Image (spheres, rainbow, N blue to C red):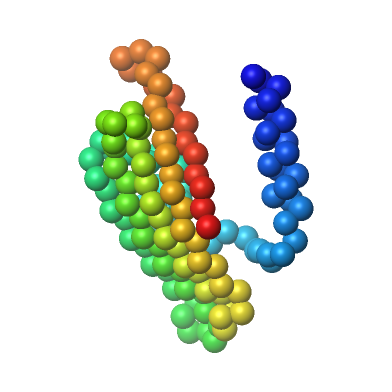
Amino acid sequence: MIRRLLLCCVATTFLWAGNTEEASAQDPHFTQFYANPLYLNPALAGSVRCPRVSMNYRNQWPGLSGQFVTYAASYDQYVRAVDGGVGLQVLNDRAGEGTLTLTRVTAQYAYQINLSRSFAIRAGAEVGY
């Protein structure tokens, strides 16, 4: 089982690295990154046990031409039926005069393993387009 999991991770890494159809740059930056928990870490989906909506906006260097504008909106909540948290996020990033744009929609799932009353481990996964 461990060999299969390791092989799957290595194969996925090589397939991802071999994708040359898409040019990409660094990830968008948020001034208050902690206010966007699903962008920070997908394991935080459903961590507060109640529905959570988060919206972020950043306009970097608005006085210059070719500004960097980033929007993000997300929703997550704990779902007892799947014994974990689920989330959805939409992100749009425009850099320059619209030369480099990124629109991303992602879905997250997080699972929590309680090891004791005061200690737990959370694992998260994310898929996106």
